[in-house]
Image (cartoon, rainbow, N blue to C red; front, side, top):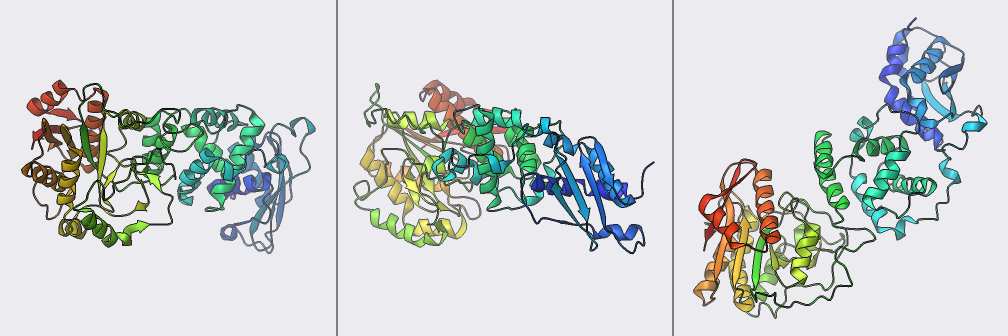
Length: 494
């Protein structure tokens, strides 16, 4: 027969599971306020103790304590601990605490080793870049989201997903269960530095829900639980675009900026974005703009950058610009392919940046928080960003110039100014004598929604690059347009 206390404990089951998890992994001194139970009766003393083990309530001194044990057993959360027993105590001031009971059956004691017995020196956190990256990504998940991740799943529920996800993400080159447990303990420790409430029950449950998803599935999952940026970063992490034992670009490659077989020199301009992730990963050789590229306008660019110092996070790790950006335009990109094209001499990629003016995709930069509109656009207009772009093009003498921008060609009074600066810069260079075979801009011809527009433009850039800048593809877009997710992309010559 159900007790009047059952509903109370059922509503607390997620908090109780966290308490059990803390107890299981040796974290002492944690308790849960259950003073709301006083509304269910007029007891003079709410003290109570109950022992729970697997499918049994082996001890329960008071009705409210027995109800607690019964709700825990019926919820199936004990299956995650493979035979471990717990003693739960309700204190006189209605604080619930838990500890591991000595009633653990010997034949189950080794199924899941206590963390305290693992060799924590096998993979030091400071020495494993992939581990550090994953810690940084997961640490941004707020507690209220972690709290909702717990699912009721079968015993030993997280080891297979953790092993599979560890292999999929290339965190370490091993399928050894003990080693993987150790790695995930280190990851949990790192997360706990920012959010001490997160336990292995939360972490394991999260991985259990995402380990089998593809990249798009992961993005949708984190969108659904309210942390889309985490999905974007984890998606990039799984694609190997930062961090890890394998470098972004094969360092055995001979990096030479030689002309490709057609002797074409192609420069593409793309926008920066709000979403960034400073991993500290840089590719070699680095390539930064300098006074040699801009003998006449370097001072203007430098002064504009000084004006934007307020938005630069100098405490962040310098990261190659192409790697740093993780927003909607960059989601469809195969960044390894972009890097390959750059190092094979097929492409020079320039990013128009709110914080830096223009930057080479290989330039290591800090994180920053601004977009190119309003007062920021006026700062760069006043410091001659269009002139900077024009001089850069005159100095580089490309055969073809392509831009990929939303917005308008003319000066914007409310929207972003990326396309304006690109178009003005190209026009000024041509007015000053630059001879090119083709210059133009892929742009949003119709359709709405910032994310969809930027994704469509990023997809066109990625496809155009994959097709080795095929002119038939360009002409089709110029003549007929290309529709992607209700966005029609066009091409307009300058």
